Image (tube, rainbow, N blue to C red; front, side):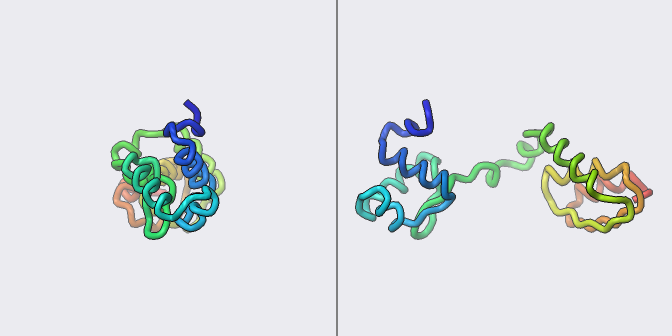
Length: 140
């Protein structure tokens, strides 16, 4: 089944495509582009939102959340190879003696591990998990 046949309703499919392309659209824009009333767009948005295909916002709709509502434990084990590759690339750009800020997240934990081979880094973080990873290298 292709994205253009996602719902079985051509108007709903077109609405989904527009939101996928633009990220967010207001009701008036959608009504204009779909050549329907704003009430029809509101009904469509409500239905598609209930199906989890889009997210309703005041005055419009946007892409459905994906990783935002995923549990940390699930994000931690998802796409680990990609996260490691990103981490290695980031670590390659950071010279010894740098000062860096690391926030909270599963990808930055991989960055912290990749930085364990560096020396004399000043790392500022609000993540206890990152601090715990970095604690094991006294040369930082």
